[in-house]
Every structure is written in C-alpha cells, then in structure tokens.
Length: 450
Image 1 (cartoon, rainbow, N blue to C red):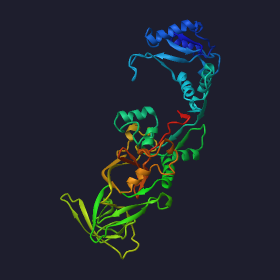
Image 2 (image 1 turned 135 degrees about the vertical axis):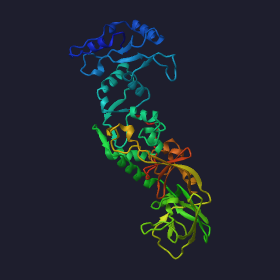
Image 3 (image 1 turned 30 degrees about the horizontal axis):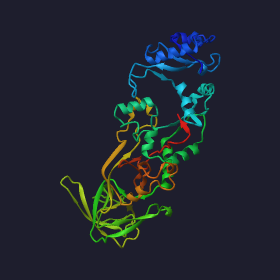
Image 4 (image 1 turned 180 degrees about the vertical axis):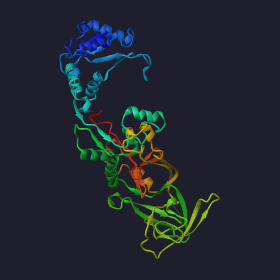
C-alpha cells in the first residue's frame, strides 16, 4: 500500500488541504519517500523513537479528489499518554478507524457494513482501501438514525449516568443500549417486526418509546407462556378447601403451547394489594365478606376474617369457598404452597420523567425518575415456572434456535395481571408494568451494525 511517514504539524496539514481560503490542495513532501525509508520510520514509531504527534502514518490516496475522505488520511498514530487496557505500555502505535473499519469487515467476511448517514462520505475511502490492497470488498450502505423519545442514546450521556451511579452499568435494563435491551429481554423476532414495520430510510426517524414497547408486547403476547406470580405475598387460608391438582393452559388462546398442573392447596398466596381491610363500592377484589375468583381454581372464595401484627400489617386472611357464586366480579392470581419458586423481581419504569430529558432545565440528569425501579425480594411464582425454563425458547421465539436451546435470555413469560418477565441469573425484570425484555443478538451473522 502506498504510504508515507509524516511529521507535519497540524497547520501544515490544514494548508495541504486548502487552508482557510479553500485554495489548491497539495501532498506532503514525505509522500515521496522510498518504501524502505517509510518502513524504517514506521518501525521507529513502533519502537518508541517518536513521541505522540511527532509522526504518523498516512495513506497515499488522491489529494485532488473532492471528497475529504480521500485527502491522505491517517492510518496509524502514536499513543503513549496512557497504557492500553490489554498491552499496557508495550505497544505504542494504533490504527485509526478509517484504516481498520474496512479491513476488519473484509477479514471477517462481512457482506454489508451498515452505517448511519454521517458515514456516506467515508464509503469512498472504505472502498478505496480494500480495492487498493486487493482484498475481499464488503459493501457499505447507510441508513437514517432511529431515535427514541424519553431516553438518552448518546454514549457521553450514558457514561455520565453510569459514573454517577444512577444506573448500574451499560447493560442496565432501563437503558436503550444494545446490551441494555438485551438484558431486558427483547426477543430478536420483536425487533425484526418493529424494523420491518418502520422500513429503512436515510431520514432520521424519532419514535416514541411506548410505540416500540407496543411491538414487543404484541410479539410476546403470542409467543410466551403465562404463569401466576405474586410480588408481595399475603397468605389466605381457605378453611374448607380440598387440595387438588388444577390443569392450567400456558396460553388461553394457543392450545399448542400445552398446559401444566398446579397444586391447589388449603393455603394460597395472593397479592397484598388484592386485599383491603375495609370494602368500598369501587373495589372489586378481596375484602371481608366479599367474594372473588381465583384464576382456574375450583371455586371462588369469600374472606371471613384477617389478622394483623403489632405494626398493623395484615399477616393472614381467613376465607371459605363460595360455591354459590358462579361469576364473581373479579379474578385474582394466586400461588399455592407446593412447588413454587421464590425469587427477586425488579419492575422497571421509564428512567426519565419527560419525553425530552435533554431539554429539561438543569439537564437530563435532573430529569431522572426516582421510581424507575421497584424491587420485590420475596416474590413467588407457581410451579409451572420449572417447565417454562426447561422448554425455553418457545417455538415462536424467532432467532434464538440457531444458538442452541435454553439459556436465561430466552426464559420469558407473562405474569398474569402484572407484566412480561425474563429470567436473568435468577432475577426477573419488567418494564412499565407491561413488559419484560431481553434482546438476544446472533453472534454469527454476516451483517454488522455501527
């Protein structure tokens, strides 16, 4: 590859490119050095003879081209101001993006390198370098950036969120980074449906976050099983209950998902918010003297009494079967005392309070939602969870079967009346009380996104 070591100053380089007056462009005199001399100076750069900014390797392109990306771009620079995170102080020269982008794509057999529109001019230098070296030539194509409201996508701003401890890291499920939505559980099939609906354009597109979530919910609604889960358990003793096995479908509208048996026990756990000490006309769940249905249980139940501890917290509800009421006004989820799994649940709301956090007075850091995460350390899920984990990913979980069956990223389910959830190292996450996502990204495609 034609190349030259250049020890020109920034002012000289600017003059070579036309200067302030946009005059004629000319090439640096070092470009006429011999190959042997160039190699010697390049090795000197590698060996630490030069300090940073004293020398750098430039590509010998076409200084007369109207595209600035052809004006003898830098290929290697000296960087010794700080140690490398892997090589320490041993390596002193590092390639630039313009030099490595196309070559890495070529070596990795990338078919299409997809970039945002600000890289349109870079396509010329991308294609020039591969062609000059006579290597395999991928195709670079550009598309318009997709923005989401109600969040920040800037790497600099996300780093501030991480450094300030507002989020735990770049993979925090409240962020819309790739690893963040991956951890949240967004299935690849949902992403494909979302993108296919929007189409690809070179125009910058801004989508409200809730619309993106609608696509994910719509996908999950037909592809994931349903289970009973209780976030804040309150025991209910059904005095005249007969213990029996209850057959519960994994999906009420999709018989192909199958069903599972759950043991209906004398004591069941309900959501604490589903019981109220004093009834009211606008309250349809459990209260003293009131009847509610338990999802798929043999009979509705009627609360008869309750007990409280010294702090005034309800610790137990007593109830009886109400075999006379066929159609109760409300149905609530429950979990039996046998076969359930105890877990920690995290429910996520929006990280920011406004649609445009950058425009808020005081900056985006002042717009952080203090209630963006709620943690339930004592939640329980019914016994069907074991089968959901065993069978994951479910048949319609498009894009996950290629990498093998199972894995925490594919253990998704809808908790009745609560949210969609995903398993992640024994934790479960949900978003906006209606979604729990985790994105799975294939590691073997031949298309790269930047």
